[in-house]
Image 1 (cartoon, one colour):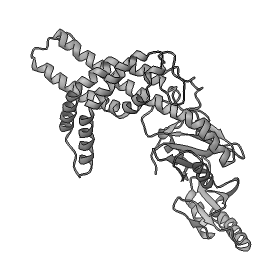
Image 2: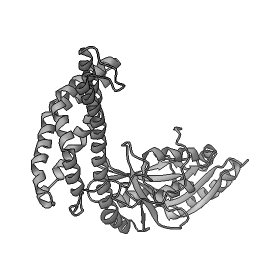
Image 3: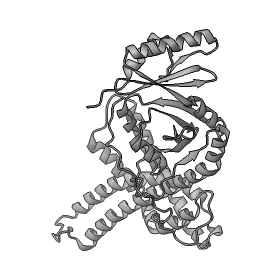
Image 4: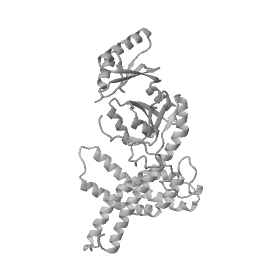
Length: 394
């Protein structure tokens, strides 16, 4: 059985001096060694010691070697500059307002917490599967986009950058809209140039197609239930052929449908407005789609009051120390679903036109020449090794 490790990675920062990051199953032992050697711990978890005085720096280094041996920790000098500085320098060169924060995954299991958020199936994915990554820099902009930056494993320089997401996503191997990670050079300005001109355009296209897919999946869920309900109403029988027997049953089924349909249509209300705003039918082979897009925009506008009520209700209930009973939530959703039923029917009728125009409106890309399938937008990557099961530790 392997001996639990306590590791100290040493690097340098122009602003902070000597920077140490503790990791391993017994990372607390590395913490103790750093504290005993006189390092100061910052709020993000790194330990620092100034390098302004050469004599003091030599004393600190000697003390660290002694205390690391005492606490069973190994010291690994890094040839790279402190990643916290690199992330900040890259963020400063990106378009818009970006910031960077260093995250430390001291225990090896903490690295697994990245899997639910990682929106990537390429080099970055493989690096996290095959290598120990004890720290990373997360770049975030004012619209909430987050990117993960790590040192490129197996190389003495260079970095890997990929996307993070809080949204529910498909398996990144099966989702052709997954934005690929990118290998970055060591120089922060050159790295920022690559992010700006290569990664971010691909990332914006991926976000666009992801949102289109969210809308289409929502409409498909509604369509299936709507067709099933209509079949029952037309036949007067349940799906197994048994007669309904009571006209009030239809009213109850309509309320149940409206309850479920609202949950799906809320995703349409959240994502469709921006997608429609990008559509330019006159720039596509289907300029006649303009009338359908107008109907879809009007349907969203007529649903705005219901959307505001839904958001207000959730915000008010989450702000007080009690929750609405499940049947009351269902009643609210059913009422809102019935209120927007005409809008839902419009979106079901014109959903194909929406998909065609939204696919053609991808940011930074030429208008599509035909209705694209979401499964042929991007070549599917070769699946890397399966990651370990995610776990919650911190």
